[in-house]
Image (tube, rainbow, N blue to C red; front, side, top):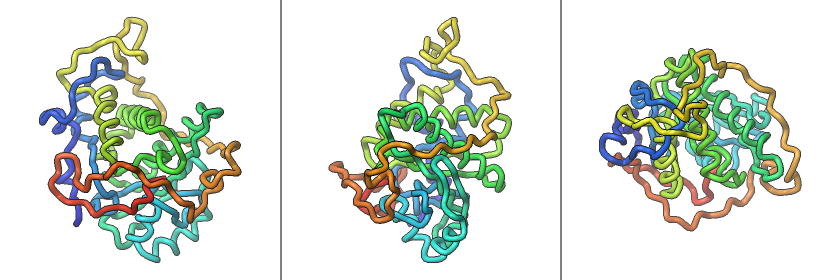
Length: 288
């Protein structure tokens, strides 16, 4: 069952129907134009008919478990053959391919970091690079839509709340940048109810509704008000990805293509947020 862009509600629509509620504190000023360019979708990323979907890949780019395996299986053998020509990718790096049998036009493969409590700052920078380089690739190829899974929150162990803060902050800064208007829609795709609830809680902090009352925020200025990044904030620069230096003996750190992924104990829903279209289930192995 294909899910078309028109079936995916924007966060502005989710505010209107009460799915998203105003946050007690928000990190940026309200800008109504952003509410029509960002979406939250619960379901199967492989059935989305958009310009590009993002694959949470391993460094080989040749497929693995979870979302990575589901995308390769649905796209078919030609995706594997094209990925073999890309010579892999480093952590934080993104590369683009055709989508073959998928309804999307392109797949942007990004390699997320393996989470490490002893190296949080570096892993956060690497995760930011995943989102930034993916967005930049979409713009460079004149694409209008991009759909992100929750990168690194599966077998790579990145805590969902921490990863969601990174994703939302980077996307908000991208929307504020000079090239931000070149994408018509940025979609956050979740599978489990737990992940959906995290996004529903945090989205209003980064993309407050137009009628939100401005309140002090930890990321605000000296007056305690929410602030916007300067317009010159350069998101087009690509930092050289840093290699993972810890957890090299674990299955996740070695980027196994056939690593066993823990199965979630939560029964996933198969419908998009406020969308009646039924999504095709992903494998139980979860996401990278």
